[in-house]
Length: 95
Image (tube, rainbow, N blue to C red):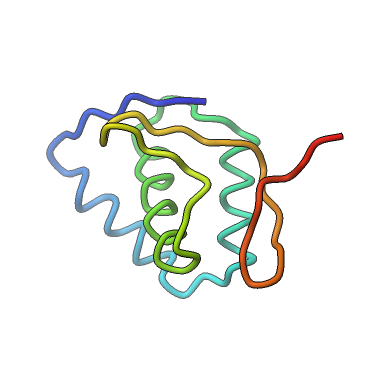
């Protein structure tokens, strides 16, 4: 699931609003939020990508890594679902 993000006016502010909403989110909530986005998939709605980018920044702040990949600053992709492991997360291994 990949989205080509081309920045527009107002994006920074929209992402900051979503980022502040995640400021006090627990690790479990962050993981559940990522898995919700991953299950739904990227549908191409700009507000959704703002939320995904905010979640990416929050994951990096809390876990020092993110399951959301950003390539060349524009290509945003969700990976497979994740699970909590101790104080961190890892990709879920499918049987």
